[in-house]
Length: 364
Image (cartoon, rainbow, N blue to C red):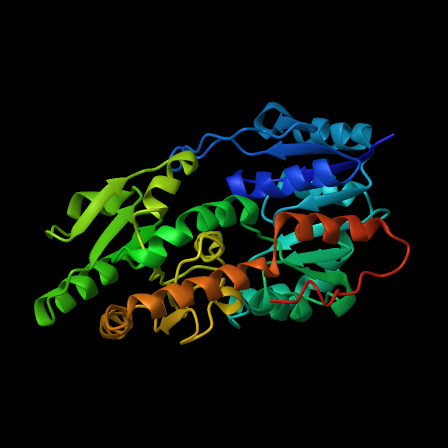
């Protein structure tokens, strides 16, 4: 008989489904997944893996959701955050009699709100959850402050579909080795917090000061589309479904994410796995795991157009061989977390002995 597990999730994403797929394909697990409605601003099309039963949250009342959860009788419950009151009602009903995880992607910043959460955590989070599943090192620091013990914190909450992007990397690597595509690529929403206007300004300034052959391709949609920078070397692609992304990966060379606020950013992991040198602001959480300064890319201060311009200039000054070598380093760093590793960590919760970090699964 298969082990049943329950996920109380917000907005689905392709990378999360790749992790769920690893769980069902590599372990004897039956996944039950409650989800929020599809986000109209990011209308991704998803294929639900075999062995996964999906429930639409809006169909159930709080009482019905609790009843459904106990009918499923899961071996563990995973809740993506602690903001949804209906999900918390489900979590509370299990009374920590099974592993109950909370997903965390927030950094510890010492804000008044976080300080308050730290004070009340013994009476709230600690009474609800047995474990925290955090994105990386910045989130682990927060989880420790919230009272979770080190042995009850798992790292690697988010994983890209690494096998998928590494397959693209292997396919394109030989071509890029002979002619490296001198194009930066941005993938994300057209909103202020992503720092995309900084990117446009920095790129245009550098082109005016030091004209070069590099281009900037931007994939995404959002309110800033109407005022998007117009320049002969900036191309605005619009919203792209994940299945159509490979054609743009093959034509571009360096990934850039200039966010002002980005708790993690799975897209960084995706492009690392695809073998891209990386340019990330210091507000991007995933850069702490997948970007090593000067090794496979460059960091810059969030919101600092001058610093971003300098980072772009550093890339422009590199040889094709150096860019290729940076991409190879990115692909290697991406293997720190994969859907298989993600699934193994969760299944480890069902073992009698405490989970310890394997030397093959380094912490972020």
